Image 1 (cartoon, rainbow, N blue to C red):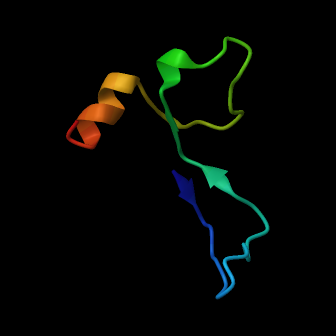
Image 2 (tube, rainbow, N blue to C red; image 1 turned 90 degrees about the vertical axis):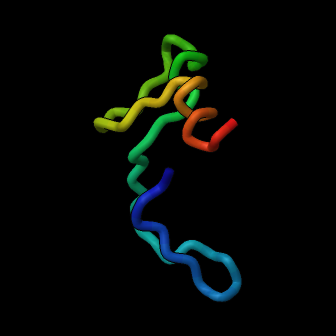
Amino acid sequence: MVKGVNMNARGSCLCKTVEFTTQIYIDAKPENYAFSNKTKNMTEKEVLEAFGI
């Protein structure tokens, strides 16, 4: 999920920075991949449960 993104009428981003607050499918990410900020981490099972799947 992305927090702080504002879009104009043409769909262009009006933001200067984007803050990622959640990483999904964290159990399937490559070992060398990581965000530098703290995020909520959700496994595949948690994501599917959140969407009622």
